[in-house]
Amino acid sequence: MFDAEPLDVVAIGAGFAGLYMVYRLREQGFSVHGFERGDGVGGTWYWNRYPGARCDSEIMFYSFSFLPELEQEWPLTERYPGQPDILRYLEEVASRLDLRKDFTFGAEVTAIEFDEAADRWTLRTAQGHLATARYVVTAVGCLSAANQPGFPGADAFQGLSLHTGNWPREPVDFTGKRVAVIGTGASGIQAIPVIAGQAAHLTVFQRTAQFTIPAENGPLDEQFVALWKRNYPEWRRRARHSAAGFPYTPSITSALEVSEAERRAAFEAAWGAGGFTFLSGTFRDLALDEEANKTAADFVRAKIAEIVHDPDVADMLKPRDFPIGTKRLPLDTNYYETFNRQNVSLVDLRRTPVEEITPAGIRTTAGHHDLDVIVYATGFDALTGPLEALGIRGRGGQALRDAWREGPQTYLGVAVPGFPNLFTITGPGSPSVLSNMPVSIEQHVEWIGDCLAWLRGHGGEVIEATGQAAAGWTDHVQQVASVTLHPKAATWYMGANIPGKPRVFLPYIGGVSNYRDHCAAVAANGYGGFAVFPAPAPRPVGKGDDGTRPGDGRAA
Ligand SMILES: Cc1cc2nc3c(=O)[nH]c(=O)nc-3n(C[C@H](O)[C@H](O)[C@H](O)COP(=O)(O)OP(=O)(O)OC[C@H]3O[C@@H](n4cnc5c(N)ncnc54)[C@H](O)[C@@H]3O)c2cc1C
Image (cartoon, rainbow, N blue to C red; front, side):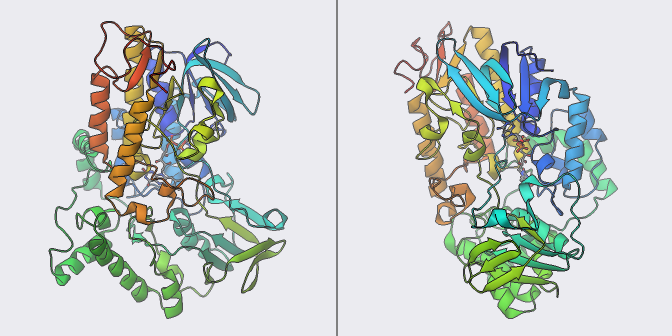
């Protein structure tokens, strides 16, 4: 139970990140407490209970690596774990490590303010909790602030309105219902085939046609699992030292240096095998070169034409206005096939936009759709959304939201100048959503734990990223993105799905392994790029460790 004593550390969130952070700091002897808005652990997998919700990372590496016993015992049943399986896994982690006692659930953090006189943070929740701590770690996830589009009349709808990212705990029965799904991102693509199998009629409202690759989900072979489990440490090592946190071997071949037939064979094999290797495992330049990218995009467009019987529907489903892979690539089970069902229709919102939600359904410029249920599969205010919603105020009472008005400024995605003693797990400017996230989460948690241990060992109480270090890192994040095709697309990676959000590339695309090495070098250099107070002795070499107090000019 939370007893309102001053703490060393407060953590927010009880998903992968919050669970490991609280455990790690507790083991290191810090007084630490977590606050979680939900009534239980699980984070993403607590909230996203929509039909078809499933991970696109394969089960063998969508788990913690710091629990070798659980790693051996946990059943690896199917290739991609479904939401209930992952929730069960995280509940098991919480039970084994006795973590629930260190969290307050049903507690939504709405204000976190830095007291410059005391060098401490004060945290408040909407439910009236009050806590003070030397350090704050946000473990609020990148995809936890649901994006609810503001269609006129939405509140007046008399049927059931649901958001995939905030799904009810009890299963929803669509039998005999007229259902709309608005949105065809990764969540919509998972939900649509399953809802179509239950509903009397499903109308899919599509704003942007999507490339999706078959998941080829299925049970895992026992021998494969046994072999995998025997070699777990090596797979984990490879994942940590990879581009995206997956232990795959990327291709070294250009799509433009092989013949048409060879290219087609490579794409065909990857399509048949299923999964993300369609991009990373086929050719090395799909994310970098427009012509190379077009070969993959053309392949998928041809597949859509083959799969979907009605040529008009197939045409509407073909993505044309962004390079493949620049939007988060969904994996699907029978997505395009679903549009051959008699009970499914597709509305192209580019041609016929929504005018309003009425009490009885949705009116577009082409007419009215009578509905019983509207499912919003409209995604998230990614990365910055959950952080800005915390009501964080740093030095001089500056709101994080104001500091990031032109886009997030972070050092390594884990610290923000002007906000001392605040750490952001998988924050903007870190590999985060471009990686297999448990790998990136573990790296951040361990780095933060080591940093706090180092401060304690060196008598440091306040640590703050310098403005100069954050500006340099933020520029680097944008520069690396600019050599890829990513900035060419209007995506949630660029903040483009939220009206008024600054258009900057939010995650770091320089690679998990490079990033990890960089963070390790910063730590080894006595936390270069951070100001520390009182300055440690003997003085480490690095920026911001000249003994000045953070916030007195150097860190601005
Ligand atoms: C549908 C879906 C599919 C995904 N598939 C994959 C995948 O295939 N591979 C992959 O690597 N990643 C995937 N992800 C990303 C996924 O979010 C991460 O893998 C991982 O679960 C993140 O863990 P986390 O602890 O950082 O954040 P989360 O799991 O999001 O947990 C954050 C927690 O913080 C809490 N919180 C937020 N704000 C507050 C507040 N103000 N007060 C109190 N509590 C708060 C939330 O309630 C939540 O429980 C997927 C995400 C979604 C939504």
